[in-house]
Amino acid sequence: MATRRRGGSTEQVLVAGAGAMGSQIAVVCALAGLEVGLYDVDPAMLTRADRELRDRMSKQIAKGRRTAAEVDDAFARLRMDTALSALTGVDLVIEAVVEKLEVKRALFAELDQRCPPGTILASNSSSFVPSQMAHATARPDRFVNLHFFNPALVMRCVEVVRGPETSDATVEAAIDLVERIGKLPVVLDREIPGFVANRILNAVRDEAIGLLEGGYASIEAIDTACRTALGYPMGPFELMDLTGIDIGYLTKQARFEETGDPADAPSATVRAKVEAGHLGRKTGRGFYTYDEHGNRTRPT
Ligand SMILES: NC(=O)c1ccc[n+]([C@@H]2O[C@H](COP(=O)([O-])OP(=O)(O)OC[C@H]3O[C@@H](n4cnc5c(N)ncnc54)[C@H](O)[C@@H]3O)[C@@H](O)[C@H]2O)c1
Image 1: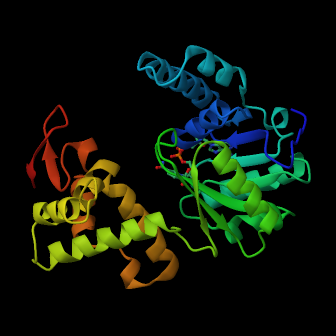
Image 2: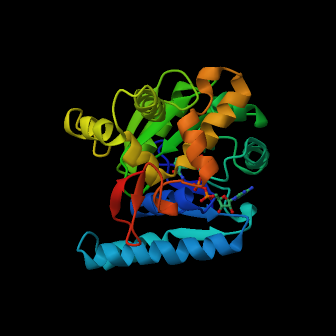
């Protein structure tokens, strides 16, 4: 794809990684009128992304949320390839590959070699900050995190995280892109692991577990207070069951191994759930139990 700029705005993007996040980010960009390349090392992931995206879009057409013409146009703007070289002539790259720092750094080094000098490189990482990745490239001023939320087709917030060397022009272009695709940019002024939303979510979760472990209130009481007094759509235990108790455990364990700070270690309650294989809805049991239809039966 040749680089084509209109008033400095992003017209062509490459999304690297066609998993849960990358596939939806790609179609969001295509629906907004951008030319999109979707790259993955695994051809099966591209096939799956194509099938799942077409399936989702058919449902949206059936519900009257989008027209068939809009969707056809979007797919006509979306190219999928396992050859990175076919897709790198773009204004901006959104990396959404597996959450392994060395894989991301290697990919950014390659993108730096292959992309035009003006291309902005962005990571959708949930935990790595720009300063951990930007120096794999010779353009740390053109490096930024664009943190989408799951499911990216639905969730409006995108955190824009600048590293110490990210230029103002890069942040402006990132904000511009987020708005262009119909999302809401939330800009951080300094990088910090976990960014804003997940840090606050984690603090709420830790406090909820502390209250439970201290014997102050039951799982149900804590969830009910969060829903009815604070207006949360779900209580912290309900949410952990939904997202998978192991996911939060692994994130905290990794952080603890990095910092050695006991405050970062997973709680005894969460550790016990993970060791017992009670990971939430996906195993039929977590903080609550669920029947075969996924309906909640009772707290465990
Ligand atoms: N899942 C979430 O809720 C969520 C939310 C926000 C951000 N993120 C972040 O998004 C990124 C992707 O997460 P996901 O849940 O979509 O993962 P996923 O496992 O669903 O997909 C990752 C994809 O990356 C591909 N891949 C691996 N190495 C690659 C490489 N070198 N080049 C190209 N493709 C490669 C894999 O084949 C796979 O298709 C991670 O950095 C994660 O932290 C995830």
